[in-house]
Length: 73
Picture 1 (cartoon, helix red, strand yellow):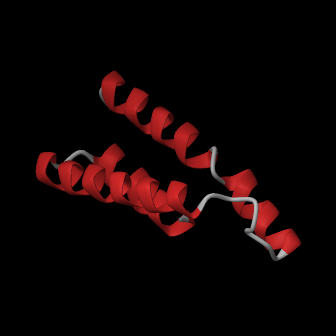
Picture 2 (picture 1 turned 30 degrees about the vertical axis):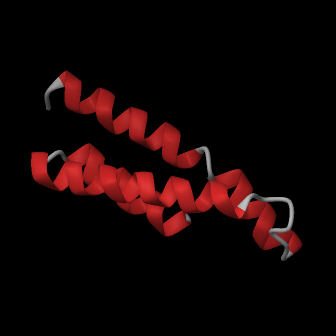
Picture 3 (picture 1 turned 135 degrees about the vertical axis):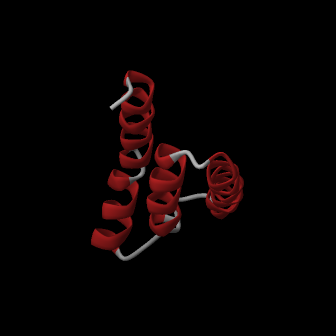
């Protein structure tokens, strides 16, 4: 596997996993009142665009991690 692909996969894993603590907190407290809805709207829109870009470029790292991130949002 090409080293640049590995860098992309690791970068995607790190940025995607950064939202896990927030998702866990929301599930535990059953409240999202302290989370900005606008944040999730803008983040989701950006991830959708990155996913489209990844599909266009056939970039597995962009496709994989933006799909997973969208599921978290």
